[in-house]
Length: 343
Image (cartoon, rainbow, N blue to C red):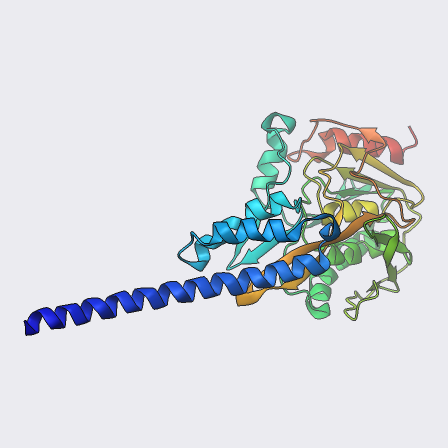
């Protein structure tokens, strides 16, 4: 009997521990999704068009089936799909949770593009045939958005571009955004300061397509009504009147598209390649419980003149002529050279 009582006592403790663990998991799930819904209802671009009680009730019911917090993050995708948040994303413990987004068919791009993307390309700034400057601006995803970190990322890129300017005096500039799938546009635009000059570069529009914010570059500083003012130290004269060819592709998205937008309205500029992906909405970084970070869509992207478009449409369409192994044979680069030579 005594042995049975001890076993029953141990079993009871086990049940109690399991119940406490389950209660802890449920609490964590509730705290996290309370925070997420609060942020979405206050700041999400399409918040006023949604039936939040119904959306939240459905999500809460699904969440009741989860026994741990980690697995409950599987509900982010259906939630974001339901509210049309196809540009939002949650970053937690080095993983990204997001909605479905757009699907790009495998036959829509070349093996060259696939190979280069898979290699996770880094920034490049070099000369082609000792006549034209080539800048490959890749995706840049990072969580530290302090002015000092953004500046430290932008400055080395700017320095490489400035070195081409002062040493080689290029007859034309190519800004290749085909591999720029997104991230943070601020270091990209700062690095390209010499080409963009002291100008407005892009804006944010509200739900009714009215301008809310306008970002600009001035004397090496990035200004956008924020207390965070990243900057680079300029070197030499601007080349904001030089000929520039901007190359876009089907993977050019988000901040890659913003970088392309920054060149719209700039003189002596041509857009070459394919239509961009079409993630032309503005995101801000918002903290959630447990160290998670939400990229929250709060507006539409516009060019320096407040014009919104769903995607970047090139002036010269070039499809499936990528050649990253030999850029002098790349169809997009060849069109850029024609522009530079006035052909």
